[in-house]
Length: 357
Image 1 (tube, rainbow, N blue to C red):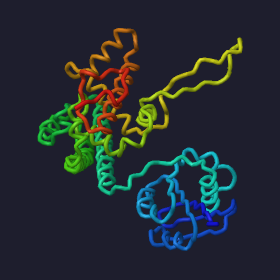
Image 2 (cartoon, rainbow, N blue to C red):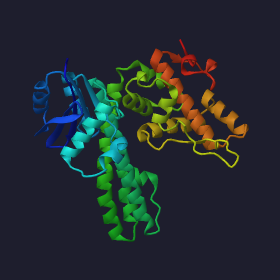
Image 3 (cartoon, one colour):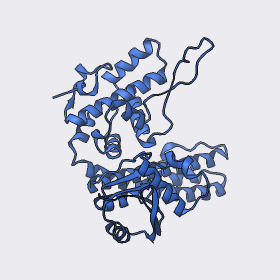
Image 4 (cartoon, rainbow, N blue to C red):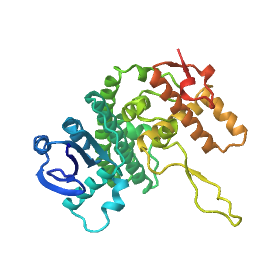
C-alpha cells in the first residue's frame, strides 16, 4: 500500500516552512531556503503519493511552474478562504504550514489558477506591469491637479501631459513655489508615462502571436489593451465550465443570497448583488468595454442597451448586462476561434450560438 503525503508550505522570501502530514499526523517538518533545489530535495526524499499546497503570493507562480512535476498535485490556495481558520489560535510558520496540510488533506482549499505556459506568463507580467504604471501615472496626474487647485488654478490638459507646453504656462504663474513643486511632480509623471509606453509596446508585440486577440479587436468597445488584458488574465477559455462562473470572476456576474423566512413562514426573496471578490483588472476592462460600446456608433451591444433602458431597466443594470454579453461573446469566440456575427447574437442565446464563421 503506497503512502500518501500532504505537504503544506508556508512561503517567505528567504525561507520555506514545510509540514508533511501522513495519516492525519504531522510526521516531518523542514525549514529550507526559498529555492527550487532545496524544495526539490525534500520532495524527492518522500516515497509515495505527494500532494502539495501553498498560498497565493508573489512566489506562488514560480514555485508552481518549477515544482508541479515533483508531486502528484500542486494546489495554490486562495488565502482569503483560509483566513478564519489560519487566524484561529496561535500563529507562526510551523502552525500555518501544518494547518495548510490539514486543509489540503480534507479538500477544503480553493485553488487559484496558474498557467504553466512561460509565454503566457510573460505576457501576463507585461500586462500587469502596464496597468501598474498606468495607475501610478494617474496618481501623479491627480497630485498635480490637486496641487493646482490648492492655489485656485485649473491646469490645461496639454500642459499636464505635454512637456513642450509647460514652460510657457509656468512662466505665467505668480507663485514660484508652486512652479517648483509642479516641476518635481512632473518628474514622477513623465517617468511613469514613459514606462507605461514601453510596457504597452512589449505587450502589443507579444499579442501579435495570438489569433483570438485580432478577432476580439473587431468587437465594439474592445481595443488592443482590453483584448490583451482579458486574454492574459483568463489564459484559457476552459477554466470555467459555465458562463456564470466567468461573469463572477470578472466582477459582472450576480451572486444570490437568501436566508430565513417571513412572518408567514415563506422563504424570503433572494437578494442579487455583484460579487465582492473578483479580479479588479478584468472588471475594469469589461465594464470599460461596455461603456465604450454603448457610446460608439450603432452596434449590437448599443442596440441592446437602448432597448433595455426603454423597457425600464436602470442604466447601471443595463450596462452590466451589456458587459456580460460582451464577455460571453468573447468566451464563445475563444473556444471556437470564430469571427463574431452580430446578426445572430441575442442576449438569450449562449456563447456557442453567438459566433459563426
